[in-house]
Image (tube, rainbow, N blue to C red):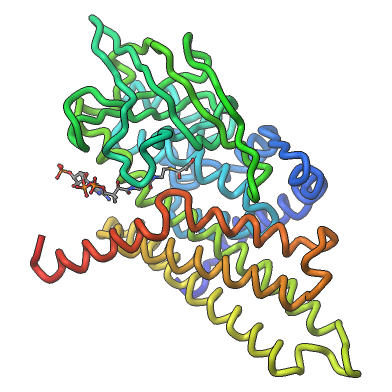
Length: 381
Ligand code: CAA
């Protein structure tokens, strides 16, 4: 857990080389113009980076979340937007691997793992965010089909995805009335509303998805009716590890950049790192980065060992994303006036970090998850 093997390090290095080469070219312009380039995800897929934990028999690398975290950290060091893309196209894969039928796996997994297809996860709605079990989108049985109607909000890859995992209500109120469906991106009556204009993650598209009587065969339902909420929560447990790993990437990039700057920048005749005010700030950034990485790797290692990890994943997500917010903000501070300009990437990293405290369950929801686990561990609830 503390040191990657040679193979693991080589995988991370391949991701680093690709990102520092191809990805850096359009980074600044794409952030400014909010441009997403699906071909970049495809190229990462060709290297195997989009399906790291997906079983080999379904086109993935068949590795663990630990390797996945090493790679996501490297991608996020260059572009948090594309780290999130890889993480989100991974959500349908983890869902299908755990809950999909053989036919569903064969239909979707190889393409998703290869980056030829893009996946999306559609849970949130205009009035259902943290309270995910209150979702209103319906899936009404009609003969051999279901007809889906509703609006999904904040959907990463909305309008670009080839397949959406859509959570919709097939039963009564609450979590037990929810089922999960695979909806192809070219389905009739599926359309796309507003593309959000965002503070950060501007190369990652976030789009409203409208289902206006979308008809899918019953074979598109994932598992039994009523398990959709558990499907979504299971995916989010693992997704929270990937968001944590991406946040570690932002921490590491900011730490390296600010340290280099503070070593080169001189004021009062001295490199500013030698002033305790700056040196201690960098030391705290290093502590936050290391503790976040350890917790993210612990969550990944538990998942890979098939041991319970839901609470540790929530802790990893909270710790790493709160750290990313603090570390990127401090990096801007170390660079002073330069840090506040677009000449340096630290202001972008700070903007990108903010949303990590919100996505895949706000950090308040993570704390609720952790508190519920604590209660259970003490035999209550
Ligand atoms: N794994 C498996 N099953 C789980 C589970 C988990 N981690 N958590 C809950 N469940 C099951 C429970 O066992 C329960 O099942 P039974 O009814 O059979 O007992 C059922 O789900 C309901 O559980 P709760 O009573 O705990 O549900 P709740 O209504 O109190 O909600 C919550 C719990 C943690 C607050 C949950 O609603 C939640 O995580 N909310 C945040 C939603 C979220 O993360 N949204 C992000 C969307 S994705 C995104 O950000 C954008 C993107 O593009 C990636």
